[in-house]
Length: 560
Ligand code: ZN
Image (tube, rainbow, N blue to C red; front, side, top):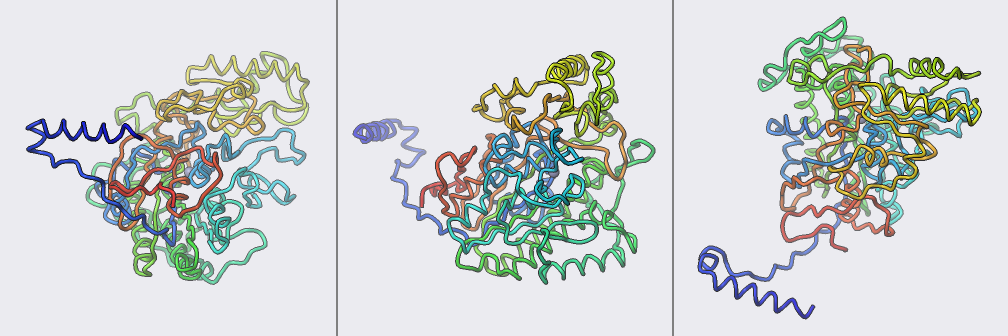
């Protein structure tokens, strides 16, 4: 403390003794006292599903709506979903819990418990295992598998008058952003928004469902690409069909899926959020409220037709408009709100188009890595097979692999050894780890940008829930052996930055805007927003850190 005036005096003397500095720079002055802003009345947390940092970089100059506004705030173009399991459920679990999947337990969209009593050994990340009616494919939706509270729950603990509301096309996005105590949560199922078992749809949701039903009945016109979509409007052969030239025309009497895999899904979700703001008077009560909005259409479109065709170009303009409409509504209501926008993961385009676009390494996964084919190869090598059920349980050609529990301990070890050896020898496999190896690893502490593959895997590893073996594919290997154009041709889920890097944009009226290119993490979002709303949590609550959202003298992380 005593040394500081001396150093300051020396700095001042140096500045004054330098003619160049004395001419060009004003003498240093004490920083003005900047009053902290009061807590916002509403926190709006937006997730754009599968919105990679690459998509943001490609389209950011074209935005004119909500995504233009958010670029006038605190812009972090390199946000990291740091972990390996770059899927929707783990990704959404990091956004508002401030914790990695290794801690919050959400290690994948689906994992397996070969020892579970029910016939369905697959576990869906947001299902209620205690409800006998629940299956992984038709889940009773619940946050019971999420091991930590969300920001909305911390806000409610600090002030029970705070409301915690979440909407999305996906139940898992609602549950992972909202958490265990959700005042209102709605997601899409079939052709309408639905809610938790035992709850009623509010009049706002009924009105939104009626509006959607009308559109499905009457159909809706094609959506035209903006002029800047240019050469993206080009047919690419994938399987027996083509992608790249779609316009999202909705035929009269269309099924719910035609709307779901289109920009109209995001419009409907944003409209529902707007209706709920008015119905619940969000941001107009005694305590700050949290509204989570996860917009799923970017992901559905990315999976169905890839992310470099005209369809994604249309979607990028439409999602920008949908977000703009939501922000304009909050403005019109005079609500003091803060916004964060990020994503649950990025994505990779279909290999058929990537091959034409300077990425010859892009391929589809070899059939030999399918779980059933691997099991056959193991049986051929060891003579071991399962008496009941498959030898291996897995949700695809990469990620967690579980060995049937009907084997002896010795047989299980031999199966694991064989699987590791067969997978490691495959030219499309980047790394293979066993549960035991990962359990001995400490959590990484370096900058997420510099993490090894092992570090990334560790951050979404849970010794009880993760597989006996984890298989990670090479860069640009798409784990979809048989593409289905219009439904499923491209994906995410890899350990690479095209799936890990996402934008993180914050905006609030009155903040000094800035852009910070240094990498940050999505687990930083919750501590950042907690500080903004003045909610204190016990030491060690977060895996991330508070980001100061004011580019000027004000510090939004300062204790209020
Ligand atoms: Zn997703």
